[in-house]
Amino acid sequence: SHAEMKEYFELIEQDGMRANKILQNLLEFSRPEEIEMEPLSVNAVVAGALQLCRHQLQMQGVKVESDLQEGVPEVRGNSSQLQQVLLNLMLNAGQAMEDSKHRKLRVSSRLTEDAVEIRVADTGPGISNEIKEKLFKPFFTTKRKGKGTGLGLSVSRSIVEAHRGTIRVDSVEGQGATFVIRLPR
Image 1 (tube, one colour):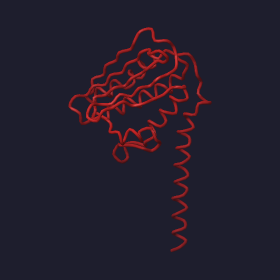
Image 2 (tube, rainbow, N blue to C red; image 1 turned 30 degrees about the vertical axis):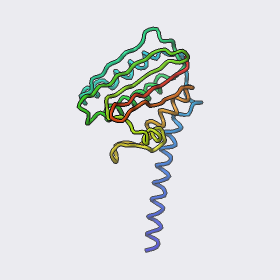
Image 3 (spheres, rainbow, N blue to C red; image 1 turned 90 degrees about the vertical axis):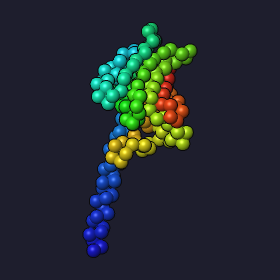
Image 4 (cartoon, rainbow, N blue to C red; image 1 turned 180 degrees about the vertical axis):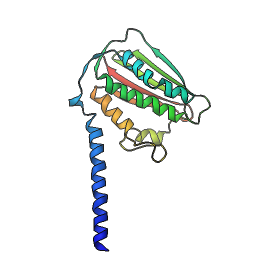
């Protein structure tokens, strides 16, 4: 009946609005003005993130290596948000390597002329140019249905940009992917 249809559509609309609200909250969460920034050691942040996900990656058969340059200067930032970005990159890498024979994750930090650079490199299938274009857009995901929201990298990008930094991916299809975060020193 017409009334039933109307009720049904109102429920769908409410659900849509509720989902939208959750998403707004997720995205708000990475708005710059609310982030408490303080001077922090990039290497300590990276080491903390590695500690949080090393076990899970090892369970997935991933060999984890880190190469953190000593004496990297401090950056202004929020350690829990930067850690969230790194966790997201590392766990993504673990998933990307699910079907790879050779599974290695290498996380490194170094100082360049004007920035501190963090690299997260995997030996997964790599990323095609077509996908690279869309990778950081909200709701884009290559994961199986129900496995990813497609928000991880877009939120990661917002967080890095709130730190006045940049994030990009270098990848040749078939040869793994390296995510590069640059933060101003």
